[in-house]
Length: 372
Image 1 (cartoon, rainbow, N blue to C red):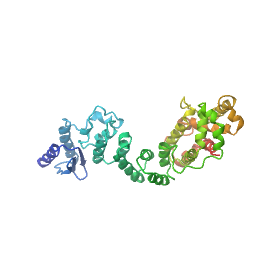
Image 2: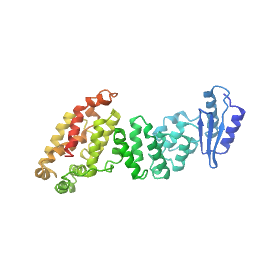
Image 3: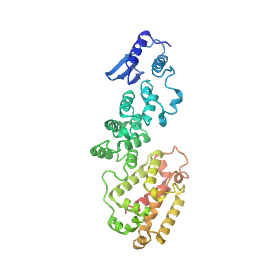
Image 4: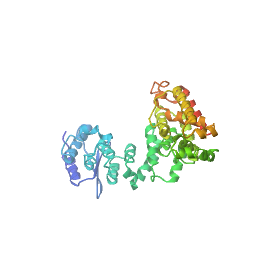
């Protein structure tokens, strides 16, 4: 389909002015351009089917910018969200009026603050904001604060758990929001497990409103000093958990496990838990059922009482045995532990939690042992 002579002329004038970015409003049939001197718009006057006319508009723009009327190259669409645009110039992508091209730019490792601002003008979108805040250079820039505030304001409108968890994790990166904003977000997240997972991911050792340390925290500090000096990971983890920030982590972890609304939130929580206790399992995920994990954790604690840096501490304080079992158990839970009880990936809510009770109850008991 050919464009009207008026539209063709105006679009060519727009392109001749070397725009920094182009945005096409399909609903209002407008083409907007961003240039150094400001924004300008070209109204369209479709003479046939709107879809075909808009395609002709994109072909004209692409022919001018890329030398190809085919629009954003199809083979690049597969790379869009994979960050594989290192060899491509990012500036032309923002001039095509193609949403996929904008996403390709914001996913690129070469994204700068200036290009990020242009991309945001071209396509203001929560997914794009999250992609941009994956770049350290954008996080460190003034524009990063704008994106973080947008994501916070947009949180009430998110419905899926993954974007909620990701948004909270992104905005909690250092320097993006104030202490007051962080505390406000924490309070609003109190009954939203997906938001709490974002906090656990971003700041496991710096959650708001730390709790009081365990009553025996000072005693443990002295009792485990030699084991910590010897590099015993169990000793370091026991002290980490006994601190005020560790108690807040365990409390939040327990709350999310008790109210996880779906498998996405549950698996993300288990990933956080695995990372927190990972030093106990440098070999990685053991892939065991809950019964196997309980037996293996008991063996681990028994072995520690017989030899190694913790043997003397266990002899002086036998209660540490249960805490070592708890640490080992929490460090080994994974999808393999859940799979026998939850074969259907669509199970969620109360039914999901009821089916997983044989796993969740031992986990909650282990967390309680580390908080007693």
